[in-house]
Length: 322
Ligand code: PYC
Image 1 (tube, rainbow, N blue to C red):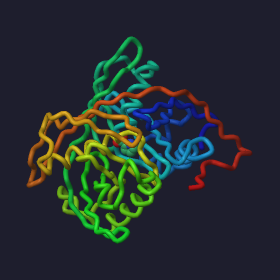
Image 2: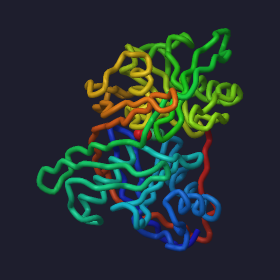
Image 3: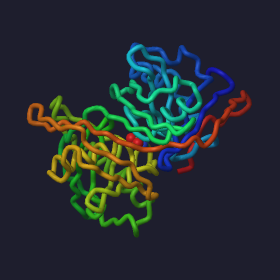
Image 4: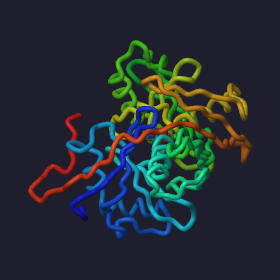
């Protein structure tokens, strides 16, 4: 831990929190020639700061966070963290960060900007109403269908479609595990998601771009023709929003199945009934792989600002009772 006080602006995007660090991290914690390098340096040397902000007693088991970073290659750099580690990209948090930093005047008021994330550059367009950002539309990094694996789960053989969309997801039909979003408790999806992620990763799906084995960050359960989803990631966090990168993965998967056209409007619904609008801007074949350019629109709201203290007599830097 570097300084005694850490300041954050907290937002929610379609119900999913983002705790955005705006002050209190020494700049030497964020060095690197790219945002990905700065994130890796932070993860190696200052990971206790992530635990401090994400976990109890200051955070909770489903907390999510973002750290803005200076970059010469975009208007803004940002990396993403959760209770267990770091993700390369995050749609809900990107919407939250762009909204909070723009509304608070921490970045210049603009109608569009480019954000460098560990996954690559993402363009964002902002809609304003007075001094409020009413929605953010972002064009995600290129996404593609990777592989399909079959794994055993609770007496079922479950098909998991692995898709890259800034993060890596295993897409699983909720019915394939005997689940239904209206009847099955969310805790059952958390348990199933963690088990399935481990089994999918053991099955070593292939990344078609590199030919190498890859692992997935989360499991995206879907039903209702793919429109509703529950995403389980980190050490059992559930995305309350429809999941920005998860929605990009789903649209890419549906396009691969021939069930979603380029430019077709797609409404994605998360576990609490909130929605993102999405569409594929384009899809091209590269070496036999369909690569898409997904776009997502959503809204974020500032929920508060915090000053967190770390007192030398306080031993509890971050814990979970899960
Ligand atoms: O919105 O991309 C997203 C996301 C990933 C994990 C939680 N939210």
